[in-house]
Image 1 (tube, rainbow, N blue to C red):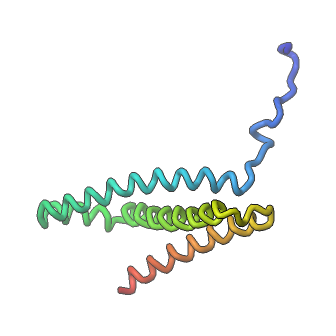
Image 2: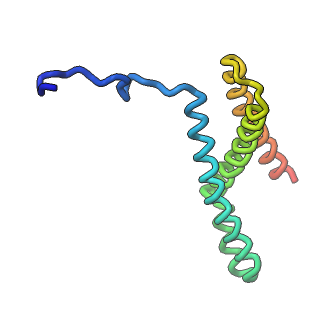
Image 3: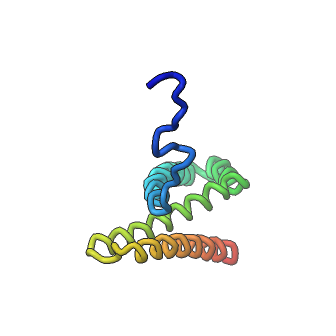
Length: 128
């Protein structure tokens, strides 16, 4: 290839767009990694609770801050998203839902149910 040849290679990164199913497949793996990090935070909270009220107050104040609430909200969404997408994969393992229309609908169902469960959980947490 000469240096004067300006043709892009195909598919070019700026032109090619991943399908929504591929994006959600990547997000499924990212949610699993985020849940693993969230479990470390849960262990930290349990250690703080076992250490006494002074250390627990420090951890609780961090979790109650706006950033802590944002992390907890993301953890809740990742948990529900991973659960719903796992159910979808179990459905696929049984041999159902491989039609193109069914896959496209299941993507939106997983997203809607994940968002809905996250919002309901946080509403219940603030009401109670």
